[in-house]
Every structure is written in C-alpha cells, then in structure tokens.
Image 1 (cartoon, rainbow, N blue to C red):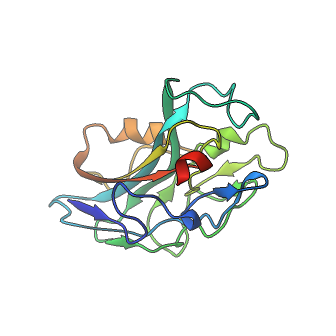
Image 2 (cartoon, rainbow, N blue to C red):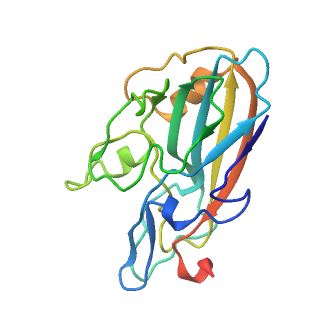
Amino acid sequence: MKLWSDSFKDGEVIPGECAFCVIDPATHVTMSDNKNPHFAWSDIPAGTKSLVLICHDGDVPSRGDDVNQEGKTVPADLPRVDFFHWVLVDLPPDLTAIAPGQFSKEVTPRGKPGPAISGGLRGRHGINDYTGWFAGDKDMSGDYFGYDGPCPPWNDSIIHHYAFTLFALDVAGLAVEGKFTGQQVRDAMRGHILAEAKIVGIYTLNPQLAG
C-alpha cells in the first residue's frame, strides 16, 4: 500500500497553511489557515472493507511546566507523548484521495462538529486532542472533531514529527462511538489491519529551529 501527499513530501516541512499556528515575530505565534493536507493512496489490499487515517505528533511534552513560557525552553530530554491531530474512520475502500482543505479550511474556536463528515462521504471523524488542550479556555473550549494542524510549543528545543498513517481494515465499521479518540481507534483496530502506509511531516514554531 502506498500513501503520498501533494502538500508536502515525506520527511519534509508541513506548509504553514496546513498548520494551526505559524510563527509571528511579535507574539511568537498567530493562527493560520489550518487546511487539511492533500493525501492520495494506491495498492489497497484485497479484502479491504474500510480505511482509517490517523495523524499524531509523538513529540509532545509530557509535562507543560515550561511550555510557551517566556525565558524558558522545553528540554529535549523531556519524555514525550502522543497528541492526535486527526482521526478519520470508516472511509470506503474505493476512496483514493482526500483534497486539500476538504475537511478543514480554518481555525474554528470552540471546535468543529462531528462525528459525521461533510460532503455526503461515508466515514466518521473522532475528536482530536485540542479538545483536551483547550478544555479550560473559555474562548476556545469545545469538541474538536476532525483535522486541526500543528501548533507545537514555540519554545520547544526539538522539531516535532507528524505521522499520517493510513490503515486498510477487514471491517466496514469500527466499534467506536460518539466522541471517540485516537487511542480508542488504535485499540479497536487491533486484529483488523490488513496493511498500513505512513508519511511523516515536520514542523516547528521555534524561530531558532525553523531556519
């Protein structure tokens, strides 16, 4: 199975238009276009009944003490955890591509609706981890279904890696309901994966690393 994107090459920088935030010299960061990237795939195995697409960042600080704090830096040796940016399940096996901006075209304070996806396409969106990140923010809190792009700490000492993974499954629908999460999808997929393909994009909001 092959997966690729016209928005960025494997191992290269995700464009700012596909990010939640971009660098701002005056305020560190500012909101960006937040468009979902383009993806296309081929060589889906026989017997595939649905597809799943997941994007996660495995470089998220496990503690937020120093995150986005003036005069501090998030150390490189801090243990890192997963942060899910996109959880899309039950896609039909004959689907071959997702257009840029098809499911996200802007930052939407207080979240996006779900789990149904737009355009009459079969499939469901799970919530991404901005749902928890913004839970205590009166202006931004809500259920963030679908895609929301990179916004790593502007003072992080490492570049973040965003893995977009496509899974071919032997079931037409996953046993997840409601506000399902990326980890719940991972658990539900066990024993049902026929094939998978991955590409990785990188991103940083630290000006010292961005060059």
